[in-house]
Length: 293
Image (cartoon, rainbow, N blue to C red; front, side, top):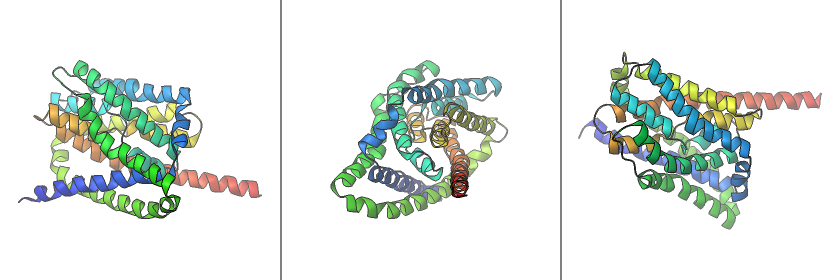
């Protein structure tokens, strides 16, 4: 048994132990009304859909026009550009001190639209791709909707448990995230090295920074909403992207490229979210001091 044979299952377990507790905590802290409320803002919902399903794919198109990637890497970037609604977003928004309810609502919205749009759009952008909606939907339902719904049910039925469990669940998800990142870097170090000189890493960096800027620019004036839009547009649904590429583009470097993209996303967005959160706290303290004076 090789080291990757041991680390790959550990990586999957760590991913589950990160995503499921995160969504459970969201469910334990929110009600259905709180999740639905942000979706009543038609302007914000329209801008979120525009950002994720029009501007992000167009950005990927522009990057591929400028950077001549080989075909398997081009496919990987296109798949990432069409996969929105990542379960990881609520955790990022939590660190950024953003609007948690909006982050959950946006994730659910983008997930549902991804399920409907991806099977139609991908075959048009990538000849030969065959994507079934259910193949995209079932892991998202299991990993996101069920834990979220369970958390909300516990909050409704047992409010006392809903207040006791989040600290433990948050600790589990944080440790699992650290393990996931470390293992991911270890497993993909050779893939990262192989991309040096191909333009692949540069394309990913431009894509991540560009998508984040798109979200922030369309996020409005409210900093808590703007952080959700910026982080939510940049954080692609890597789980869906890996599922689609492994089923349709298993030859070449497409799957490896998506995995490398997932690691780079974490490396960029985690500290960015925490920096935004620190600024939010500092701004709140400053306003509090000013009002006190």
